[in-house]
Amino acid sequence: MAYDSLPAQPVLLALQRAAHASAHALTAGLAGHDLTGHDLTGSEVNALANLAGRDGQTVSELAAACGARPTTLTSVLDRLERRGHVARGRRAGDRRAVLIELTPAGRRAADAITWAIAALERRALAGLPPEAVAACHAVLHALTEVTAHDHA
Image (cartoon, rainbow, N blue to C red):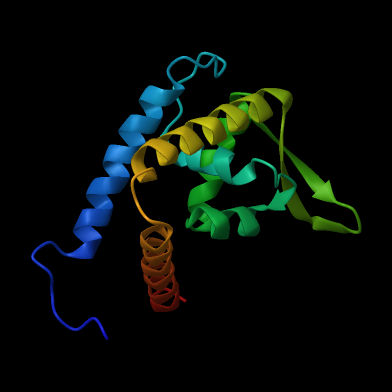
């Protein structure tokens, strides 16, 4: 069955409301962690979460993972670098490729963020059947793909 009629609440508005509520809950979940005394913005949390376990990404790779433009991500990375969470390096054999690496402080922050995300997801999704979560992932993938193609 194809999606061809608007629900009472458009999916994108519900998604935006859920994203804002999740960001607030995530901030509350991070309150007890020492993140070098700095409040992290949503964009900084997103970047650190996407570097967790996968640092050594180029700016373009990280931007794709974050759903951001590389030019937008650069200012986020500048702030994270000033705060001591990331360092920029070079890829062996390609001096033009800038790699983003977590520092020890950045790794601690990324670990705390990963833990807070997992805890929030466990609380929010505990009562849902696996097929509902899979359907949500399918919707999010479809929205990501169509918007990526619209901006390509």
